[in-house]
Image (cartoon, rainbow, N blue to C red; front, side, top):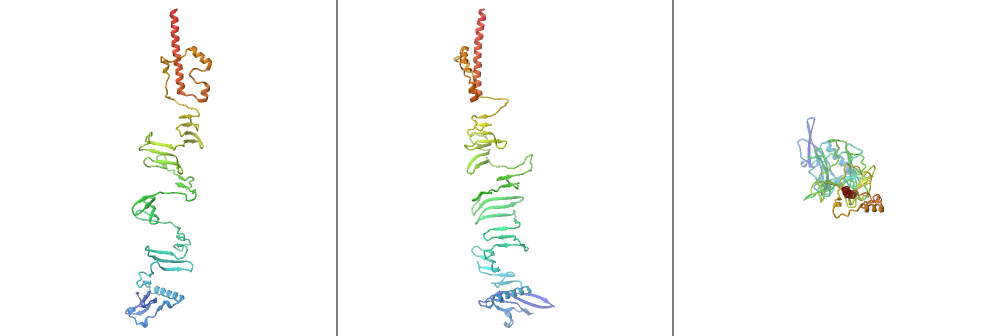
Length: 418
């Protein structure tokens, strides 16, 4: 290869021929050819008389110091004559310095005898390589920074000590790969930031999962904060913005969405909104439930039990062991209580065994309570069954009514005899 550079000095033109490092002697010995100045007219080097070629250097016959010296001389000459291209291992350099090395061989090496950085072009998967040949980290820096902008460690890790700007037509994106498969993506579009878990293959796009603070042989104690800088729970969501007089924190948007509460693999309870095909016995709307064997409990005053819905469906207020559908340990005040029960109209049937007043008196003297009415001791121990007792008390009222009617008839008969 040869390049010509022409410059003028005192209106006299001088041509400088700057030739590359190449095999120009027809043999196997690499020869470095320096420049040779001539005057006009331009004479190609090939046509110069052999005696005027001053600087043919046999590199194989040079020791290291002479080789380095020759290299420095060639570089200096290139700068002085402003040579356009220099080639190493090629007679047709494409740029100011072109190095032609065999595939999978290192091209340019910079070393201090301990650490070496080099370039290489691989052939198995065609690609360009730049890094360390020795087992040392590789750093990229700008402006002589003491701290590198990018660092690559010997165990395959990389670190960035400055901001990373990624841009594209539809916004920047970072694809997270596992081998040749894309398993995740960080991307932006407009003012939105997307985190996607997916697996892209040649045939399909498979949705994946986004996992935060997952254990891997260790118990992770880290928390996640949204709008919160010091989360003290696994997930903290903080916001002070009011929209329509309320803070919009969390929305579950789906068909029959479910919020599940699990003890690892065992579900304990759930909250769901049924909007389609509710289970038998349910209607469309909110459902708060628990799995078999787990009650639903309500607490106030720092985890003091206020109300419980037991596993058998009984509700307790002020008690942890309700034995009725509603057990209340305390006072109840109500505008009205409707009790569904049978009634005592059977007293007016012709075959009803109405005790006479004498028989009633005899029973009272022997038992100290009315026939068919619970004793005081029983009420204290078992409580008062309102519907049952109301029916029995009505039976006694109806029995008294029948006795009064009978007495009235007797009084009328006496009056007639008078």
